[in-house]
Length: 306
Length: 303
Image 1 (cartoon, chains in turn green, blue):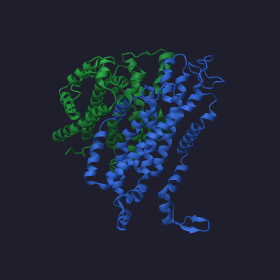
Image 2 (cartoon, chains in turn blue, orange):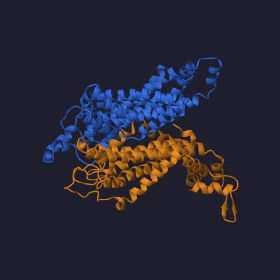
Image 3 (cartoon, chains in turn green, brown):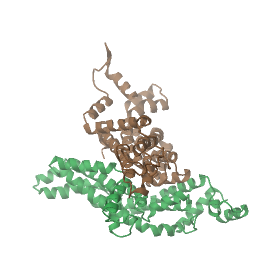
Image 4 (cartoon, chains in turn green, yellow):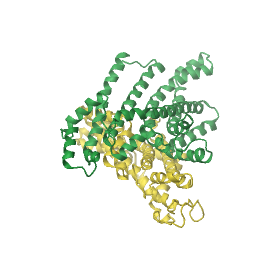
């Protein structure tokens, strides 16, 4: 187990190197001189040359990249072009807001999605099943930012229950996390349902029934536990769409998180910020998926980490 | 489609009226029959075809010019004259939504086509040749799949600058790794079949084997994956325009219209509701069709 975790952590290195290389290379091939962006169009050419030298921008590409990686390993993601603030500080300041949003959306998606899937799969009345799947399909197809707009018009403007300009309270978290979580909830509901329908046909479920166990115990201990293994994998993958979704949802609800930070960085073409936020998000995502993989062992003892 | 003809040659003998079916149906005929019997999927197919038709015919169908400014009728609610209302410049929302499909759907479809084409080429090469080629490609693919697509998408948009063309390129490139994985997996299974060995024995070239023998047999999962992927690429296209990184005003692209309508949520809900409804309907149709295609073509892909 420890070995497995160690090996997985070790495998993060090439991934993160790859991500950083990619964003670094993209920044390099992009037209436009960051020094000119920093100093404005009217800077003297001496000043530009001086600052270029100072920042090491005349060094070969690989030297610059190596320096970036070395600094990043020491927690230095560079300074933003505009404002000259430390990129890491800016990211750390905005992370809690995004974390709060993604976690509550995830909570909603898992609880709502999995229970909807269970209800759909176990219900004998066909219309409940049909209804749930129709709702899931709608949830899968509705663009989160449009859903957000509709809910803002209804609950923010017409009913006045939530603030429209982006509040920080718990109440202002409900709509954003609902909008962000709807898509993943729908995906989870569909998978949970089909996974359960597959598992109930297994021999061990028939055996459990034959032993005379109550339907409740059979469902909870034998069906659900096994059906949830693929669901857990999908939760890890859905985390990506949640992280990505914050880019849109934080814009609609004017939340000061990383998603909006990324959008602003792109609009301003502030590459140190873009590189930093991409690297940071990728790290979070990879670590999240590692912890998901470790969860398997608890659900299915047949899975061994060696 | 190529595969249809090939497999039918084996199963059919010529009758009086050309080809007559004798021994059985091709995979595609079975799939089409299953799809036809699935009313939900047919709704999706018809809806999508209708949407594409409307988009192509939008110059004829749209009641007004989508960019024509009419200062006498700004922010008019839906009425007999302007069925979906007008925006702050008096432009007809219905006409703009009809025209907007040209941007939104085209970008999403072409983006998926790029991903499909690129992913198929990369996946075929990787799976067919194996060895160090496969190893190299797969390590790169792993890195690209290890972090959320949207980050790659945003990095590319950042490099090329916000525009609808950028979104198209970014959407295509960022989805290539996923497609190549899918294609490679299918190729690995297909390349050990006897017909591939047979083709090699009669001296077919590598390219010939890949294109004429392996590709037709792995088309089904690619089609299913692409259809389901089209839905999310429509949402991403509109979403990126919505946050200002895609189509720029005065483009009637659906996401850009939503972005524009943001300032008038309080006074003109119709500016935001109708473009979003168009996105929703398009994605719903694509998803319905995708589900049906998956059931018909490749039950193993069920997620």
